Amino acid sequence: MKYIFIISFLVFSFFQNSLKAQTPDTVKIGCYVISIHDMNFHNEEYTARFWIWMVFKNKKLNFKDDIEIPNAKSIDIDEYIEDSTGDKRWVQMKLKCVMKQTYAIADYPFDSQHLNIIIENSKYNASELIYVADTVGKFYDPSMAMIGWNISKFKISTGFSHYLTGFGDESLKKPESDYTKFNIDLEIERNAWGLFFKLFLGMYVAFAISYVSFFIDARKADPRFGLPVGGLFAGVGNKYIVDAYLPETSTITTVDILHGVTFTYIFLMIAISAVSLRYEEDGMLKESERTDVITRWVMGISYILINIGVTFYAIVHAS
Image 1 (cartoon, rainbow, N blue to C red):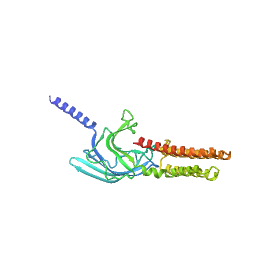
Image 2 (spheres, helix red, strand yellow; image 1 turned 60 degrees about the horizontal axis):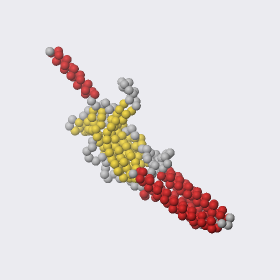
Image 3 (tube, helix red, strand yellow; image 1 turned 60 degrees about the vertical axis):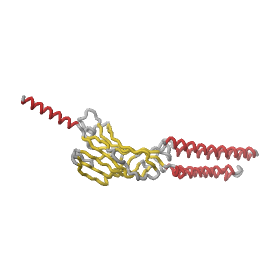
Image 4 (cartoon, rainbow, N blue to C red; image 1 turned 90 degrees about the vertical axis):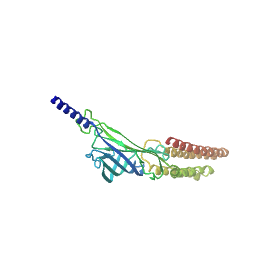
């Protein structure tokens, strides 16, 4: 009977220790975003400053050296605080991160963007450590100003990152691993109209300069052809300036469409001026005048309608 009791006790201890070994440490994690700034579209990055904190029981855990933000270009720990709350450890860090970001620019400048910050622990996988989100209180400073942007949605969550590698761990049956992660997600919308007029004012001036040529007699070839050519160069220059703000992409954007329409219309102005001049040289003065009048109305109204349509589509598509 005595031996049965000892064996039972040993078996119970074994299973209890096995259960403990298989149970991952739970870490309560939260954040408070201080600022999002320096949004650089051309370099596809932005800077985020925020506090994160973690509450846990296992005193062996080290977060200062093991913090991992996979989608960050650089991570700076500005402050690090450790303390105890009862039987738990409390760690708080203030981070400044330059984040990688693939911006959605198809509807630029009426675009909305999704910013995502992923926080992992590089040392412990999901079988050893899991995150639980601290959802009490605010997640960001309500006075945080993102110049030219509005925050439409802010959410925090936890999950798992799956990697198709075991990182050299030969004990794994499959060369795959999971790590717990903490997500900070922001949806932001641009206040676009001021930027829109700044970006496209040069393009519209270029069109207006070219359009004036229809009010000049076709026989005055120098100004009749010179104005559209000058407008074309002005439009191309404006396109280069706008493109300097944006990353390289194969996507046809609103910027490309509006400039493309403007270049096409200026070319048509030059072509129609040539037709009108030919009428003048053949003595067909009425046909020349009629061509200018009809073209003036058709091109002016259609250009305005196309610009309104493209702009409206970009606003609706981005929302």
